[in-house]
Length: 250
Image 1 (tube, one colour):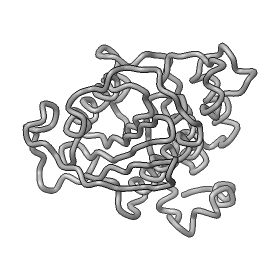
Image 2 (cartoon, rainbow, N blue to C red; image 1 turned 180 degrees about the vertical axis):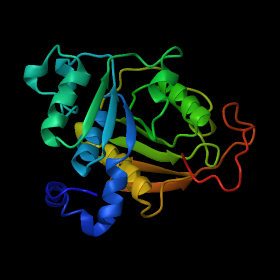
Image 3 (cartoon, rainbow, N blue to C red; image 1 turned 30 degrees about the vertical axis):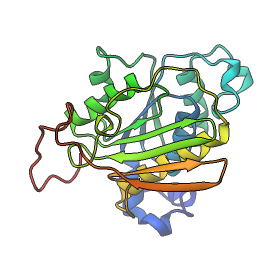
Image 4 (cartoon, rainbow, N blue to C red; image 1 turned 90 degrees about the vertical axis):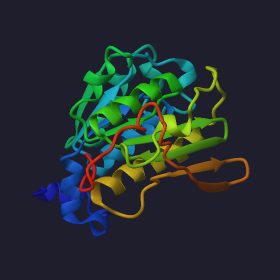
């Protein structure tokens, strides 16, 4: 049962998700891969909502160029590890949330250790090679993956249910070329908020997820469009995996 203090803290969302939903948030274990433009937005909203255990993974330090979009890093954090900068703010925001900080690069050697035993994986990365590693781990451990990506005034988001929906490799068979891309901070706010909403909906069994649907945000025109996507039966990552009919999630 949630405490009296928690009821006061979450009183504006309890009419929407009830105490049962709040307990589901409190019991959740989520991984946020990347503590940059998307990751700081996602971590802030999910910590504020009362998600119980948040694992932050990043190996970078705070740089001056981060400040236009990475909202948990302040000027006095310059040079500090991003996971430490973010975790300090999140613990002040909500002391009921447990923050685990992992100062590692996500690669072939670390991805399984980082993702194992999580209920949710959130892709807040800025490159596709790492996203593909998270996608493979999500399929291997049957963990839902919440994808988001941004560039300039544009962004996208989708929710991947392992082996039930199109995976990231189905949607993007090849990786775009690496680049240092331009970005408006507010774009991260839009897409990070959508990813956070998807996570809360999934954990509390509310609404319709972006399963087999890709949401595109065009900030220059103010348009948001959703397009159907489909699983590739020949996908190298998920195409040959068949789950039992009664499988429902994690």
